[in-house]
Amino acid sequence: MRDSHDDATASSDSSEPTRLPADLPTTADVPAATVRTRVTVPLRFGDGYTVTADLVTFHGLVDGQEHVAVVLGEPAADRAPLVRLHSECLTGDVFGSARCDCGPQLREAVERIADRGGVLLYLRQEGRGIGLYNKLDAYALQDQGLDTYEANAALGLPEDARDYTTAAQMLRALGVDTLDLLSNNPDKAAQLRGLGLTVTHHVPTGVFTTAQNVRYLRAKVIHTQHTLPLTELTAG
Image 1: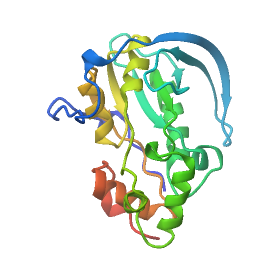
Image 2: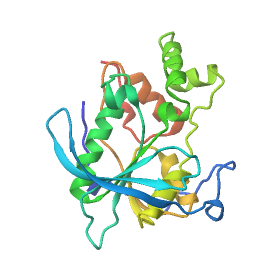
Image 3: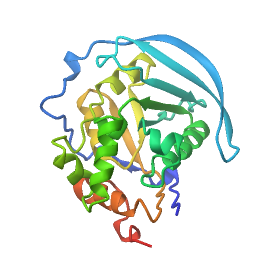
Image 4: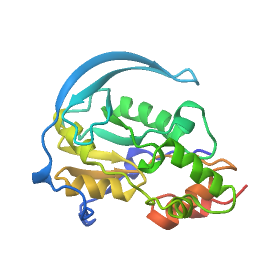
């Protein structure tokens, strides 16, 4: 099921507290990154949607990973760009796994950002930062009844290991200091604000449920306060 949200439903984050985990850098600790390469690439999705994007790579990212910015459209001069931080998901983005909502979120985000103008950051943070093999180990535990967060804990891994310092570096290298954030995850906005960026509005994504991902989506609401409509996340 898809429950689309228009930008008009976006909420202002001005009243939300700035939160930065104690073990993450502050603004003063983050070195500047620079653009390495910018290349135009035509994109085509499985449903036939096409769009032209600029893919941007960087020098100086603090974690040394090969993150990519996908620049889409052209934001209006009087409006902040729409930005999504999308964590890599091989199973969802590439193979169309129904156990998560990552693939549909990626597809939706590209079109919405292209229409509005902004940037999608494709971050190499598979499995909320624990890596592909650990994620598949966690899947095996979920098949035994644990939810996605309980499975990580059972493996001795953090519920969410993602650090968005590199995202802040990438945005600043692209000249973006103020943005509207396309996300249901309050931690993304909190970390970006803690790193000195201005998140003007928190724009919700659509809701993409399958029979196989309802428990996963409910766990995101309960454990990490994702802004998803819990009443709609019932097993079908």
